[in-house]
Image 1 (cartoon, each protein chain N blue to C red):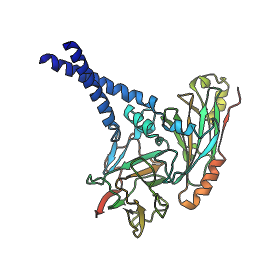
Image 2 (cartoon, chains in turn yellow, purple):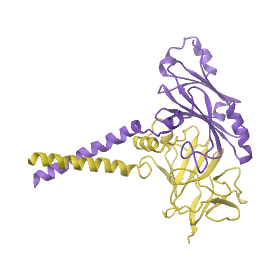
Image 3 (cartoon, chains in turn brown, cyan):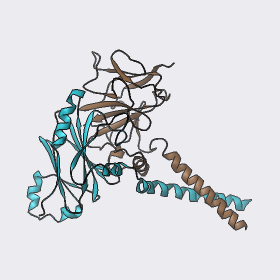
Image 4 (cartoon, each protein chain N blue to C red):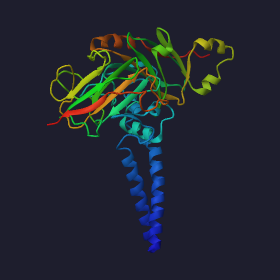
Length: 192
Length: 183
């Protein structure tokens, strides 16, 4: 009898721990191989055959097609530079310089990766569309209400993510965090 | 008491094994992965345009709305295929995925270095069967080896501003994905 209860206990612990950690691991981004600069994280190996098993599981579940390494690299931000979760009711500024690439695009998605509806039908900027300062820096306002200059509407949703993609860029598996790769800062400027 | 701690410890150990097995096995159970979603709308071995993502509906999550996209769902069991994609004015890329959505090869218009991207896709076994004397001709023939018999080729053309979208769509509409003549 004791043996049976012991076995059941062990199996119950195994199932809850095993499935629980699997579920937990797939909630956030893949924990391995992240290349992080400020608020932005990219997973260069996810676009290669050397993709890790966690990223494979995430990709299979979400239904996305990761960007191939020969195409470019995608950086994702769900928090600002100080670690505050991006809230569509707040005004957020994305500003600074972008690393070397033939083109880049910045796109706003809801947490499921769908575009967010707005009257302007603006879902992002490309490197050609964005208006730059005289020093060549970008300054994009991600906000629920219209702003002068580069306005990226949030539609007022409470959670969103920004994806910054660099096409035909030398950033990749061999890149090092730090001075050689500078990405724009993400700052909450006001929150109601 | 000691006996219960041992049971719990062995449960934890078994839990770790369960964790790794489920992570490794998950890609095989996903019925809504990108390959499955695209199989529902794309016939085999031909190029079809992917509808542009919009807030109501996107075929796949996280599609870049600045790009026109087309897909060739390939099946190499009958033989290799040849892909021809004219390059668009701004930027064009071709990415190859296995049927488990692993990106195993990607090339852009500059790396291809021509006015159109031309590639042959075959399995390693089909490549090994190529006659020896064709190796010379293979120098100007880019051959990509697919690790799986089926998969996706995704063509993407950038519209650097919204007015460029018709040109990007038109460039992709001239892309071809066809069976290689048997050698």
